[in-house]
Image 1: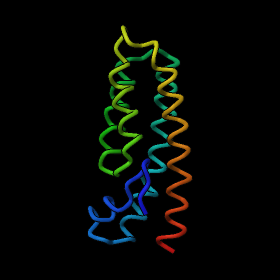
Image 2: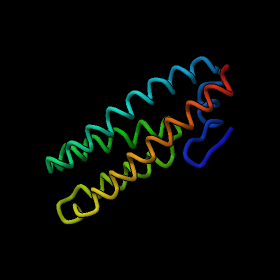
Image 3: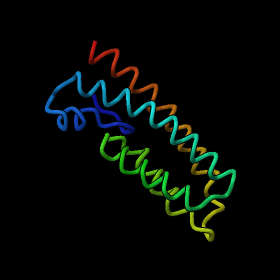
Length: 117
């Protein structure tokens, strides 16, 4: 199962087809994603550019490793927009990130229901 938001086949290949490992990684990623998105939202509200950049950088890497392409792309855009001159874009990008995170949760839960069980 492949999706523009999440590349499940690539993740499965990285895990050498071990679906139990895929499930554990997806569960961990979903929990981490929720936490990081919340922390980014809070950092934006408090105008903490350094924290935004650190969180976005972490999320970009984790999402890239997990084959969550859209999350990784949005995290990269947030990282770039955290500079004071581009700061006006942050609320829109963070809103998109939050929407995408909700979408990832739904898609991952569907995948785990169909593919793993």
